Length: 148
Image 1 (cartoon, rainbow, N blue to C red):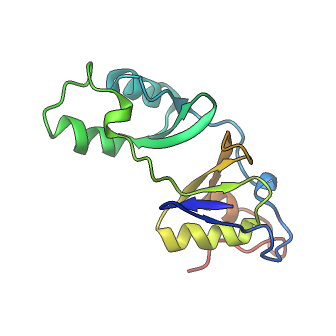
Image 2: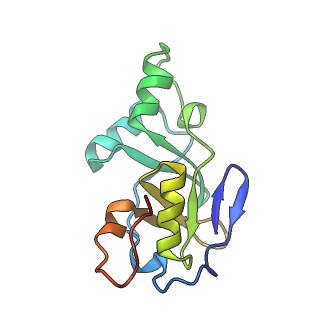
């Protein structure tokens, strides 16, 4: 299943042999939508990441990037100590299911112009992240990387 723009794509019948659970990273940095941008930037700095999953009650509700903070808050003069993640996050997130086909997920990433997708279970709970670099590192013959 891939969710994007309100549409859900079921990738589990795509005929590939490698599933997303085989190549995803299960350890995902996340933030609550009520966190301030100051708190969020600190988490990004400490974790060495440029984006965070936004999770509320174990469900993926969005994503926030360092670029979001700069363009949607700092450049607009918002107070980062008083502005919440919910106010500037992207809520339309491309995500896949843990049992979806990894090769098809790579093609979906390419078609949406993203280098990572969050992985959720049937309940929409965050399970991991799949990156294009993880797909590219898969040995030849197992599953192709993202299509061009």
